[in-house]
Amino acid sequence: MVTLMGKIVLAVVMVVMGIWVRKLIIWAWLKPKKLEKWLKKEGYKGNSYKPVIGDLKEFATMMKEAKSKAMPISHDIMPYALPFDHHIINKYGKKSFIWFGTTPRIYITEPELIKEIFSRPNDFQKPHPEPVRDSVIGGLFTSEDHEWVRNRKIINPAFHVESIKSMFPSICSSCNEMINKWEMLVTGNGPVEVDVWPSIDNLAGDVISRTAFGSCYEEGQKIFHIQKEQIDLTLQQMVMINLPGGRFIPTVTSKKFKSNANELRSMLLGIINKRKKAIEMGDNNNDDLLGILLKSNLKEIEEKGVGMSMDDVVEECKLFYMAGSETTSNLIVWTMICLSLDHEWQTKAREEIMQVIGTRELHFEDLKCLKIVTMILNEVLRLYPPASMAIRATTKETKLGNMNIPSGMNISIPIMTIHHDCKIWGEDATEFKPERFSEGVANAVKDRGGSSSFLPFSSGPRVCIGQNFALTEAKAGVAKILQRFSFELSPSYKHSPCPFFTLPPQFGAHLILRSI
Image (cartoon, rainbow, N blue to C red; front, side):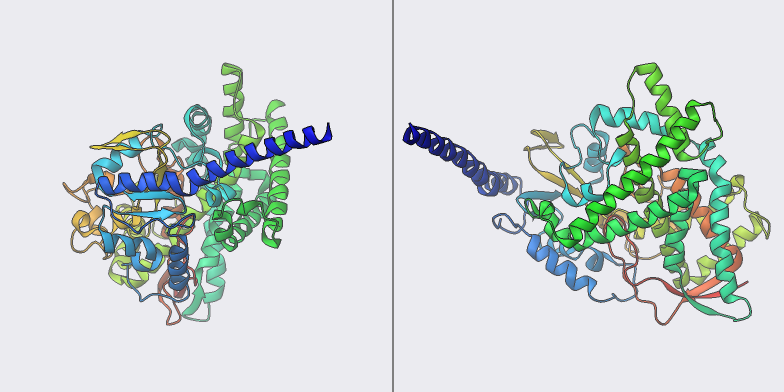
C-alpha cells in the first residue's frame, strides 16, 4: 500500500514538475523566439534574444555608467538620461526594439500611431504586472477597463477648475513659506549659492499635504516623507525586483519597504476614516482633494450601489503624492535651471509678471494672463518631460496601422526622444526656445505632428487627470520666485537629469540667488 501511494505521489510530482518545466521553457525561450520571428518579419531591428535577461544587463550597465557622473550642460539630454534607448535607436533606427527580460519592447515614434495607441486604452493597456511601477504606484494610474472608468468619474470633481481655484490659497501659502526661507538666506548677504532642489521638492510635498488633507496637514507631511523613502528603496532594489520572483526575496531593503508600506496604509486609513465619519455627520467644510473624493464616492455609492473601496482610496491618496508632487517639483526646478541658462527669457518672464501682478499677492485669475510663463513651462516640459517613456502592452493580437501586433508585445513610446526629434521640432529641437509655443501647443510643430508630438501628460482618454493642478502650482511657484529673485547657475552646479518615475536632478540644482 505504501509503495503504491509512493508511486502515486511520485507520479503527481513528476506531472506537476513537467507542467512547470514546460511553462518555463515557453516563457524563457519558445514565446520570446516566436515574437523575435515576428519582429524580423515586420522589419524591426535589435539585439538577439538572450534567455531570461534579454538586454537587462547591458541596460543596467549603461544606466549605472551614465549616472556615475554629470553630463555637459546642454538640453540634449537623451544620451545621459536614457543611454540604452538612445544607443539602440542610434544603432538600429527608430524601427527598433529592446528585450526587457523575456519581453520585447518596440519603439513607436510616428505621431499618427501614437495618437491611435493613446485613443484606444482598452486595446493598448499598461503592462500588468510591472514590478518596479507596481511597488510604488497604484490607483488610477494602473487601473484598467470598468474600474478605471468608475474611479476616474469619482475622482474628476477633485480636479475641476473650481476645485483647484478653492485650493489656490493653500498653494500660495506653501510657495510663500519657501520664498520667505530663501529671502532669509539672501537678505543682508547679497548673492547666495543655494541648492534649490530640496526646497522645491518639499514645496511640492507641502502643497499636496495642504490640498489633499487640509486639516490633517501634519500627517500628510509624514506620508510625503515615507513616500519619498519608498522611491529610494525601490531604486535600491530595482534590478532585484525585475528578476522573476525577486520582489519576494526577504532582503533588508525589501523588509524596510514592506514595513513602510504597512505604516503608510495605516496612517492613510486613519485619516480617511476620520474624514469619512465627519462627512457622514454633515461636515461639508472639506474642500480638499480627499474631502471632494470621499463626497463624490459617497454619491456614486448612493446612485450605483458600488464605488471605490477604502483600499482604492488609499491608493489614490498615495498617487496624489507620487504624481502630484513629483511632476510639479520637476517642472519648477528645470524651469529655474533653463532660465538660469537664458537670462533673456528670465527677464521677459519677470517683466510680464511685474506688469500683470506687480508686487501684490498673486490671484488665481492672474494665471491666464501669464502667456510668456506658459510658453516657458511648455518648453521645459518638452525638453525635460516628467515621464521619459510611456509603455503599453498587447494582451491579444492587435492591429496598429498596417501591423497586426501579437499578444505579449510591449510598446514603448519614447516621449523624450519624440520631444527632441529634429524632424518634428526642427533643427533647434534640443535648444531652449519658448517662442515655438507662442501660438499654443497645437501649432508648436506646424504640420509635423501637432499635439500628438507633445506628450508631457500623456494623451487621449487617459491623459493625466492632474495636469491642470500641476500647471497651476508650477505657474504660481515660478511667478512668485521670479517676483522676488533673479538667479543663475552656480559654478558647482552639475547637470544630471535622472529618470525614474519622473526626471529629478540627481546632483541637485545649485544656483546663485539674488533678491530683487
